Length: 156
Image (tube, rainbow, N blue to C red; front, side):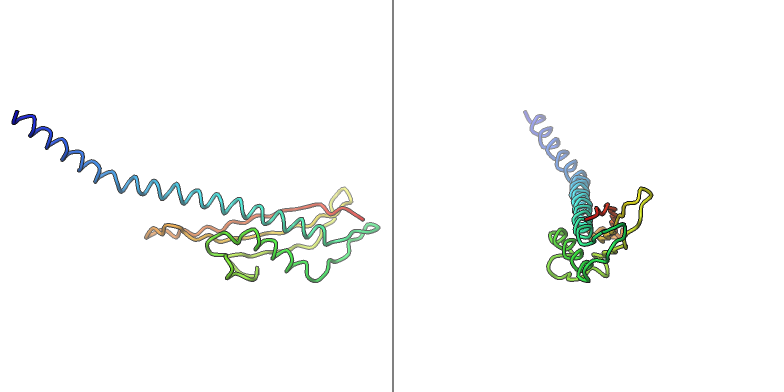
């Protein structure tokens, strides 16, 4: 009777030691999965922001008789507002970022280009710098996501 009680106490002590040794690894694994999910969300949001801003730009140009006319002067700030609208839910953008000229959100608008088939296309590049959700000492944790979208401009 005494031997089984001793064995039970020793077995429960082993379980506590095993849990204590594995708990940091499970926590690290959970944080990595959570951080990876955030990076995937930021990647998708940046892609959507670039696409919607490029659609806005393509609509602001006009092509008539084989030549493009410059858009209204508000097209770059308008594209910036489309990008910021898509990226507002990301942690380092929020309401504090109001412009798109420097990271964490940077938008570059390129002028229309004449394609080989005679049509015009416009392109836009969006760059977003992430922040680490769980900072790990010794690792930078910042990732700059760049998305370039090219869209055809249809004539009037």
